[in-house]
Image (cartoon, rainbow, N blue to C red; front, side, top):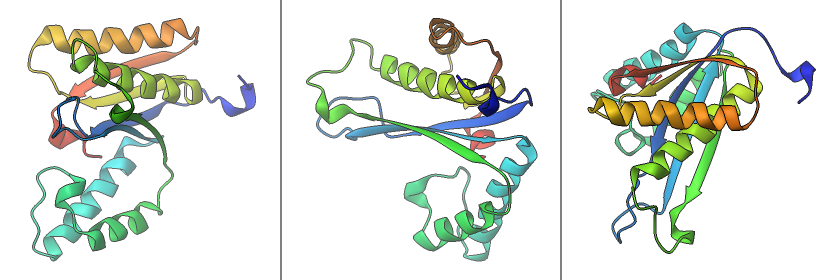
Length: 174
């Protein structure tokens, strides 16, 4: 890893996924994980606030930013407004259609995807606050997600400081 591309500044990542973990015929073919990163969590929140404000102008109520609920004009406006702030994104895609069967535990695919994205973030920003939506109500499942992320980073031999925050999804739509 090049030292010139690594920073010791604290970065914030807000993570979400699109798609589902199922492998039945009505399931989505892809599951996508995205982390939006910035030095300022406030900047990420301002992007979401601007999208919600523009949605209200178009008489659309958004409790959570969901692509299937957001009209194309609002996506365009949101991306244009997002260009005002410094941010980057790390995206990973799993093509579930290329597999015959999923893992025995369908949530394992979500944990692997999330851990992969978190590791990719830490490679670039080793001092990281990683915010993920609280997908699980059971503490044991939340712990399994944290463990999967920690194992992925440990296996990579990265020297990093990572805090993982699991927040309600309405707070995670950056």
